Length: 275
Image (tube, rainbow, N blue to C red; front, top):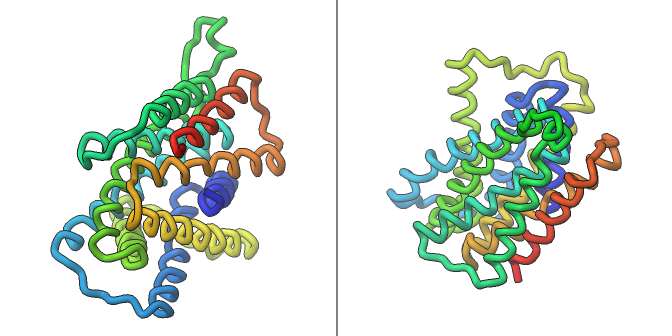
């Protein structure tokens, strides 16, 4: 929760300064290096089953797609509202785990999911335009929903991989796959990834982002080796508490009362799903 909260806040800030693609690529590269060093310390076995070889590139692609949509939402929208909308990834993860993994929710967890959906709706809709007959989603919300959908797919795949090869190797493989995918994507999409003209403090912040996010992924993958995605991911998705707090304190983001209520409801719903 704290790792992603810090990563998403910094990502929201620097996506506006150097663009979402550069922010994501270099933070993932930093995460790959830190995870590799951790794997050396823990003397990780690199024996990889065929199933994992097939699944980890897919996991890397959907995770990359999720964050690219997420950062795009940050680039054009309000950090707090986009972050709250991204909580839908927990709902998507639960839904896919229920349908495809055979995992089940208790009655109170189902109530929590409904609170998340309701809260995200309140937080993401531009209510001021309703009275003007211009019903529309706040900027960046559509991108955040797409991102949440891809994250939902990713965590169910990641659970399968983690149970096969362990949390650390899973994290390392996914990070490697993400960096390779982004390099290929940048080549064919003619995306600029250089940071030669970027201020040093931004480079340091991106490294911090990568380490924080890699740590978050590794810890959640560890949780998936001893628990189910349908319970583990909702707890981690409470990262909005951290992201929104940082955005209000440092970016002076403004929220309407209805949007604030929606964010609180979504956060409470996430907490309820873990009971």
